[in-house]
Image (cartoon, rainbow over all chains, first blue to last red; front, side, top):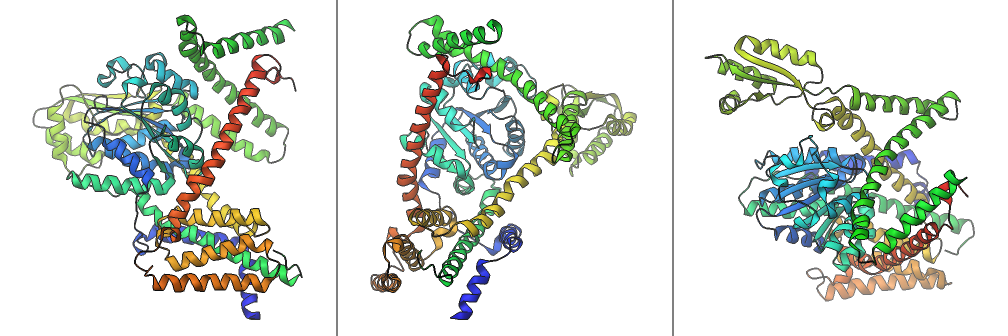
Amino acid sequence: MEIMKRIFILLGSLDRRIIFLIVGLSVLIPLLKPEWVNLPIRPRPESQIVFNEINKLNEGDKILLSFEYGPSTKPEIHPMSIAILKHLFAKNIQVYGFALWPDGNFMSTEAFSEVSHDYGKKYGIDYVNLGYKPGAEAVVKGIAADIRALYTVDLKGTPIDDIPMMKDVVNVENFDFVFSLSAGFPGSTEWVQYACDPKNIPMSTGVTSIQVTDILPYVENGQIRGILAGMPGAAEYESLVEAALKEMDLSVKPGKASGMMAAQSIAHVVIVLFIIFGNITYYITRKNKGEDKI
Amino acid sequence: MLLKRHIPLMILIGVGLLTLFGHFINNEGIQNFVNNDATQWFDIIASFAIFLGALNMLKIQLMKIIKKQKNWQYSILAVIGFAFAIFAGFFYRGANFITLSDVKDGQLAVVSAIIAEEINESNPHLIQTKLEASQTAFEIDKIYMTSESAKSVIEKLHPYVDTIELKSKPWGAHVQTKGSLFYWMFINIITPLGATMFALLAFFVASASYRAFRIRNFEATLLLVAGIILMLGRVPIGGLIPWWAVSIILMFGISAISAPFIKERSLLLGLTSGGIIIIIICGTFMGWNQHPPELLSIPVIQDWIFAYPTMAGSRALMIGIALGIVATSFRIIIGLDKSFLGDK
């Protein structure tokens, strides 16, 4: 019994560097060898709703895709962008890229260039990237009122009147769906409050894990249709899209989020184990000090 | 006094009231102001604010260096980074590309081979097809950061092509052009640095939860139990945890929560152990190996926590914040709060 106590005390007083090393390895090994940890990905109802809503769109429909994330949140949100673009391009839906964050320009450029080539999509005909404008919620309100008052040129400097797919687009009401890839402010909340709810345009969102609790009330109210929650949400959407692409007899490149889920799973388990060991040690050391109250 | 305080205050009160009442007055002029003009004014001010913010940042960092304040060395990096971004954005495009037309007779295959080698295309016939199909000047799909590197390719192509030009992407568009200096800086410096900073959170969360997530009292225990369930429930591994393991976790959780109310340690231990044994016996006889009840599934418990307690908390916070914003905004609009003028 005494040996067990000592082991737990030792485990509970590990040096911070050892903890960092264990956490590092628990992330690194599954990333390098994903085949060692094969975890099934089951889509949650919220992810399934997002998929169904986008799947309901018809060929030629217009979707506003807003990029509100940057390099720090790229690992969580970018796989969602890629999976959604694959889904949209496979269904021949016209995609209009916007950005409420300056970094969003780079994210959208990268996402479009990564996917458009595989589906043979042409800039200005199948997709357009209008880019970032400063002003946060005012930009959303501007897009809801008159896009041309805000945007005179696209990200490449082409006048928007020269872009074929911008012909009949005046404001947010000309879109069939809005999807916000959001990592904070301005983001999904602003799209709900200033554009989609007042104009009654259906919207969905993909957010970072820490944002989920802020957005959930809108999802429960039906103002946002489903939610892709963090990297698990991205992996679930990837699996749904991959299944849909297979059904459509299209080539499928595996997404990044599914591969990263093993690393996240193991890391979470390691952190939980640390918490348990820490508490056992805390209990033993308190008892030894004569404080037998928890 | 009039210019610095009264006029700004009058503008604020006027615009604030107009915007507020604009939502309730059905007048086209006012509606147009609220929905269009005011929004554009905001955009213009926001654009200027970017310059103001950049200059302010530069001033703070330079003052830190000049006065050699604490950690002033980091400010040098900040200023260099700022200067480099300005240089790449406003002074050096680094987004050169080559266009060619009028390939000399019989030289199409040679030109295609040179271009294919340049853009790492394994199939030169693909380039040849594109060259043949191009109605106007053919653009080589590669961006050259320096004009010298582009010129060396031009020299290679020159004997086989009549018209060959070195061009640059337009100012502004160069920032988003793959291969330009600014794009290179973003992808190779800002992106890894940003991702690294965020990734460090995993280590700090592990270390902090190891040391601080303790069963100290009822509230801390509740937080700990909910935290563990959420951490496991959000990832696929949570769904693989067998029912008996979940029942043990739940029994420990219930014991931890009820511990502050049960003084006798042996009674608590007996109840916990008894509970675990009863659940495992019941589960074995009721065939839970095949169809465990939903209560013993971590993702289901996690969904319940998200759908009810978390949702209630989020809504309460949202309503509280909204009421706070209304109160603060009203104070500003009627001129009671003058903090925007520098008042404390």
